[in-house]
Picture (tube, rainbow, N blue to C red):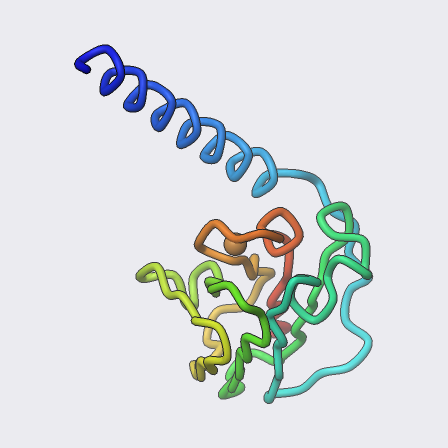
Length: 144
Ligand SMILES: [Cu+2]
């Protein structure tokens, strides 16, 4: 009985460790970005089993996708719509990373902020899901 319980704990820790390692590796992979060709202040991101706005079809995780291009000082409005049957997370480095936020199946999340800091910021899913690796390499590009 005790052996079984210890074994379960060991397996759980091993799985958690593998998950964290995979997350760390993908979060630091070099990615190919196509940069900004157009700018907007309002974005719709569909979270599905094909990633964020079909990041799977756009070659994630090797390619950056989606790419949200704004100008510094813009008020940015992002609607994340989860059309999947699983929950997904949504974070943006510097702008929307104060907590783990998940969007349940069929739910919509509204994110608004002023893009006061210029630079390139990673857009990623913050919880483990079935297409997690393809949801780690979006970009918010804030051009001054
Ligand atoms: Cu995920």
